Length: 157
Image (cartoon, rainbow, N blue to C red; front, side, top):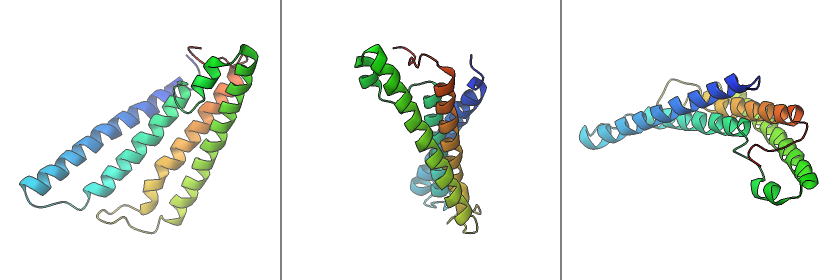
């Protein structure tokens, strides 16, 4: 196992817990709305936070596992010399997009930290933290793949 496997496993675990919480929050929303006729105001912002967390941390774990955010068909069909170039390009794009998400997510988080989310006593900036954290992990995992794989061979190809 590589040195970032534990971090990727933690990201995937948090993403999985977020999906379970999202399901429970949505279930409660349906029960409260249709059975109790009392729709809680906190379910939508909590569900969005869970969805953002699951999406970004799951994407980062997918980048680590080389199963997400790549040019897989083109790389697999390319001759070995071109495959190395395409994989390097793919990983550079992953790093760039991850950094963009991390920086802009942090910027949005800081800019909206003083604004409360509707229906819950949490700053709106908290909803952008998964974007920033997930972006940073995407960049970290892609950079690690770029640096540690001298032959730039995608897993399974």
